[in-house]
Amino acid sequence: MVSTEKKKVLIMFGGVSPEHEVSVISGLQIVETIDRTRYSPVALFVSKKGEFHYLGDMKSRKEFLKKRRDSVTFGRDIKGGYIQLSGIFGQKIYVDIAYLAFHGGLGEGGAVQGMLEVMGVPFTSTGQEGSVITMNKQLTKEIVEKEGIKVVPSVCFSSCNMKEYHEKYAQEAVKKLKLPIIVKPVHLGSSIGIHVARTQTELEQYLLEASYLDTEILVEKFIPKFVEYNCSVRTVNGILEASEVERPIGKDEILSFADKYERGAKKTGGSGMASLDRELPAKIPAKERNRIQELAKKAYRACRCKGLVRIDFMCTPKGELCLTEINPIPGSLSFYLWEATGVTFRQQITDSLEQAVTDAQAKRSLEMDYSSDIVEKFVKS
Image 1 (spheres, rainbow, N blue to C red):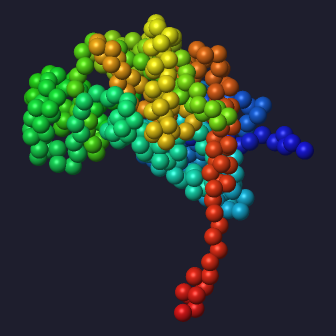
Image 2 (image 1 turned 30 degrees about the horizontal axis):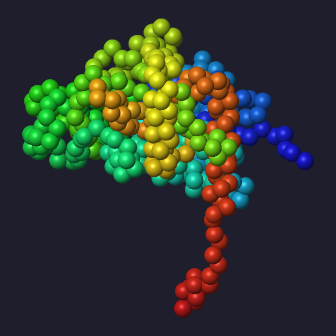
Image 3 (image 1 turned 90 degrees about the horizontal axis):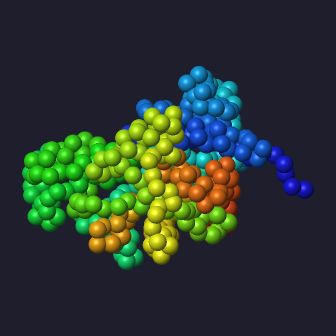
């Protein structure tokens, strides 16, 4: 007999990250859209200080600021993974699946994924290994380049001694790449901390500023008059799929945080990445669209991705297509890219949850229980 009991879904968002507010928007979009005939969702908000707050069964974004915030701890017992409300007799809430809507920080970078793996709770998004890779722009570039995917020429610096050596690093970057140059924090998204340096003095300043935002700094050659393309990739029923391709349209020289989240939001009331001005589908030949989609799939596999990600490309005036970054949990979950292919946001959420369970079961089937008496012998010796 098939169980009709709804699966308990823990929707996790917020976090210690410069993209905290963007994550809250994505999380609330999931709260409002998830199929409640199949799932019983509860919200878990992580504050900017890293505190975990249980918000219970929210149904609307309007409840977010009014909801009582109960502290929780995490655990696992014979019944499975759970969250427990604060207090000696705090209620245990067993979780079937976690839907991750974090952007940046530990929530997107692999730490939460590792915790959920220890708890035995399936989760949407790339696993711990792939999250660590894709949240590091430099590491991503190194891996995809070995697979024959072009990237923008760059150099990477550590932030730990930037104050002492910023002039030397700036000289090294200019010698290798020539001005102008783009400065990017390695682990941050949403275009936070990105600047174009046109002089060595500006470069030194931006390197110092970035050193306060991240542990590593990526310095890339500036490509004038480039065109940006984004494509989402996901796994559904074990099959790799690529979304429609979009061309973001920014008012700034590089696509900024304001372009992505603020300008469009003034017209739409705030819908995260979905409010960005864009050309969707991108007005490009079918051959070029297919090339972007196939490269996106190739990068997905190379970087050990799972679930749904967004992969960003830059096309140079010479027609060279360069991968710029992979977003393991993209803003607004890139739902608009899949809606352009005819898949509703609600169905996307369901697909992600079902695939998360399938992935967890496959991984569990590989676990080996190796029996040995070495501990007993050690204790008795």
